Image (cartoon, rainbow, N blue to C red; front, side, top):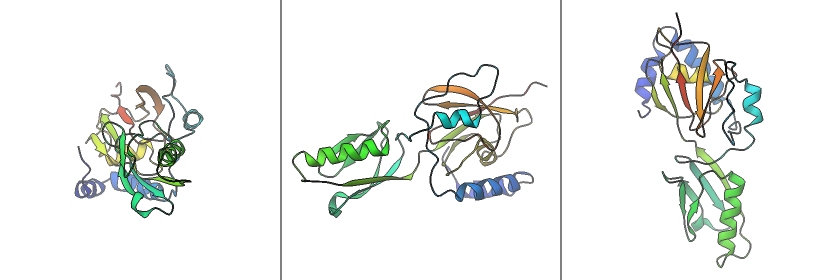
Length: 209
């Protein structure tokens, strides 16, 4: 499902969802920088729920992935600078040096790789800066009204994600959610402090009556 602004406006007009989503989106928009995203998936927590502190311990550096849009600046070289996207295979195509396998790289590693390639027969002392303009989307499935793909917003939490997806169904478990991150699914408490990151797949389970 691709994000549709009109559909989001309709959702925000629904009683109960409007206040939750509005507060959530205002809070998200206030963040100047993306909280660093996970290097690896969390370990299974069994019957318990992972805390936000446990997430932070494993989110030291953001890793690039398919769908991320980058701004790359090669200082003093306007023709080599611009906006580029990590494609479905994890590749970024840049002027002069062609293809960079960016999947899984940190921004610093990406910058160093580009500098090295430019230094190899092109520029004497290249200086490169890269930033993420648009992060890859996240996904939400299970017991929500409208599951699917949604654009990531800085500071996104599980509750924000549920609000964007139209809220819980009557069967939805409002206490917990399962998040798949880098191939590992873990259980988390459904709290404002539980962060969502680009590429996450959130699964809202059914509650037991």
